[in-house]
Length: 630
Image (tube, rainbow, N blue to C red; front, top):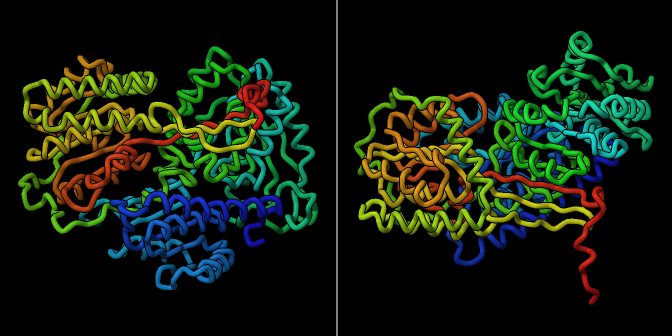
């Protein structure tokens, strides 16, 4: 009631919250079994949103607790009552009061106090992209090892419909994806791309379906759309609607019931716009924008979606397998849904989270989420590189890499990612052998790391992980490269460590810029090409050029073998960037990413994509025909 949810949405959220509790408990048993090299980090701050005040709240908290941390939970101020009841249940379940604390109140005041407290060891955040950036900048000011920020943010979510789609199913899925929960889901449909050949018919059907929606008080079971969360949100939506009425074509606006007067109700709207570029930011509410496209322009549409920088959910409606495959592979999104709606990800079945400006990963409800709340177990001989490094000069950005070189590397990365997984393993094994035979002590020292990560990539990278799910649907979790990764090496960096970073980045599917002043780094691109990696996939540059890439280069992440002083400088440089929050994988000799076991280290270089396919929409699940009775 506090969030204005329908009964349908409330029941579904309780189920999701229960799923989180059970799934993360099971993952903790697997991750922290006897002999595990991981342990809890300390105190984790969990900042949850109002749109899923129970499920996301409990998801963050239970994952952090399961990893062995204490938790300070800061719920959205609009839904503090739900959080208070959840907190009571947490303590009743046996969680010690010393390990869990609820801190309700204004986000701007309490959030700032918590984020800037030197005693915290990490942050889980779900909310706006802008707030995530502010949190990232605050954490970057702290000296030493980077703290994990697990951010799930917004998206400019699209659904692409071609002329082979079943119109009735498209309309049903667009209505559910765009207007259920009053459009206040991170995954909700914002832009509906329709091939022009069927656009008139589809838009007429969509308007007809919208006319059947009932907007009103969610306490009544016959209501389809309830209120938005508060007056501020309503006014933002009203302002957007007024702008669209002047700049776009209004296809339909639903009516509200008389009793909605005086409340925070905003009726579902549907506009036709010429391009996704008309939208300056995410419109968080029941508004769907339709864009017509010509079949020959599909690549331009995909480029526009990628150029937005957001990558949370995507819907595809097509009966052509090659079309589905090409679109799902090209678009950099976290969750792709084929021939079904694009909301309601199920824990442990459809791990949820975005790419780019839509999130940092790892995915909530997925196999790698809990371990991100952990750190390597401290050992007495663990020391920082600070004592040995004399590479502490202030960062001065001088040299830059041309934009066309980044484009060439990204094209090579896409080619590498599309290469058969087993072939990638073989190529990396060849690279390891060439390093071993090079006669260069530095390359020989790290050659085994390349072969090791090639072998590890056979689990989850060579082929997707088939997640459990219902008959008539497949759910595959892909671990993929993020794009172009920068590996920055101090001048006295251990060669084996640097090549460990290179091997992990390549095995995860990335292109790599090797930045450092060591002469042996310059030999690696040629060896990589000789081994069969795409030309331009690996590039060696000087240390200052690497700093230029950190400043404003078209990179997807940074890893470094450097002193803690330098790591702190790198964090602050990356935090000043606009756009996506970039991960910094540090290897300073302290208790940081460099001390992670190899499998966990490999996943730090990867992003995850879940592809869910409604197999019944294309004739059913053929695998059922080959099943034998017991």
